[in-house]
Amino acid sequence: MYGGIIAPPLIIGNAAGVSPADIGLLVACCLFVGGIATLLQTLGIPFFGAQLPLVQGTSFATVSTMVAIVNGGGGLPAVFGAVLVAALIGLLVAPFFARIIRFFPPVVTGVVITMIGISLTPVAANWAMGGDAKADDYGSLSNIGLAAGTLLVVLLLSKVGNAAISRMSILLAIVIGTIAAALLGKADFSKVSEGAIFAFPQPLAFGMPVFEIGGIISMTIVVLVILTETTADILAVGEIAGSKIDSKRIANGLRADMASSAIAPIFNTFTQSAFAQNVGLVAITGITSRFVVAAGGGILMVLGLLPVLGRVVAAIPTPVLGGAGIVLFGTVAASGIRTLSKVKYDGMNLVIVAASIAFGCIPIVKADFYAGFPTWFETIFHSGISSAAIMAVLLNLLFNEFTFGNTKNASVFSAAPPRMVKQDEICGLIEGDHFENGKLIDKEGYEIPVVSPDEFEKIQTGQIQMPVPKLAESQDH
Image (cartoon, rainbow, N blue to C red; front, side, top):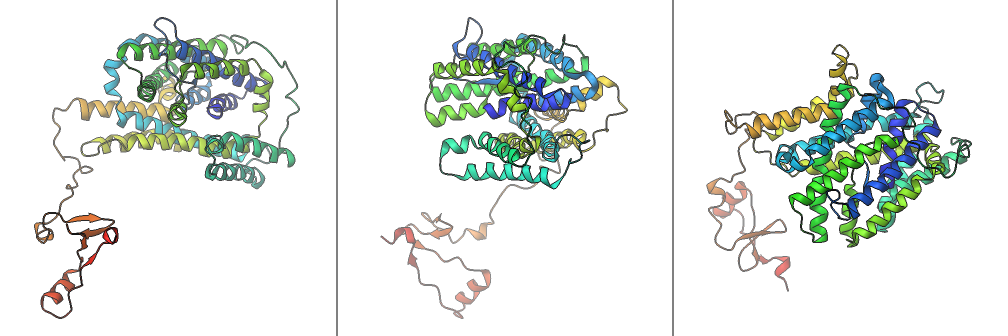
């Protein structure tokens, strides 16, 4: 999750136009607060923490929304204000979330997660071109070539047989890409030594939070999605670990999520959530001890006390990040597609997915689409993630919750007939006939020839001979 936890501060910091030293501070703060959140979630205190092996870190779900807030002119203080209020709202609704989670089925969460990946793809493309549109080498072949080389390393490392290397492919590719950039003279580490090596994160280093209604509404929508994701992670890791999961434990886990998210802006960082990739790691390794993960949280805190590490990360050339970001952000979109694969498209769900994703893509492909709208409206809908989430929730309510007036197969999108077979196509089958490896086999294990209508007529009239039945390959022994 290290590669995932450092990406949001890099994206937000670059969008806000802060210095490399300040980006280093954001990275250190993300690590520090991620460690605190992990300890709270794993060890727990009364009413806070699911006490499960869940790694917490800066949520990717809010990145697109935070970029929209920054681009709206609010800067980092407006982002921190929106995160703070949205987290407090999430903290209030956490105990009741089990009752409203039905309004966030896979057709909604799948759309939102997919849009997170899609909406971040322009960020990866901008990084691959150099990150700074005013620079002389922006969009040069050398920048894009460096990004392509990093992407190639990610793919090659993912291909190797070693599971540990494959899982760390993005992080290792960033290291290799940075070394290559340094050899080519495209990496500058001169500012890494500027500043303290060890330091406690300075609270409110970017000023007091600023509260803008549009940013708060937009962030609250995404926080509801984060609560949905964390609930799914709690259920998943509970099943893997063989732990009993009830509504009380879910509420404790969600409160830990939101409490750490509310503290995060004080320490110059963003919303916290459970990292789903670490849930998969628990399943792969079979190590289900929450104390092992708590130790990982302690390591994150120590790393967060080393701002020099943050400055090293901030010095990574943006084309290298662009190459890794293509896979990283694409993986997020793929996770959403995987969630959408669980959806049944026999009703209006296809319309919900189609309209929501298209609506979410509008501000991505046409950034000035909402320029004529009020500022608060533009802040909410300028984010593809917020646009898609609002549309998906409303359409899900309209078609799947308020079923009055629904007519089966009324939509042109869902009117395709079900799969069926004509009666005369199966009249020759008898009990025991079955398909095996793409061949029709009878109950004795002999392959039944499948012929065309023309061949069937010629066999019937004696023009050609009937194929000799033979044992299927699986029956030869």
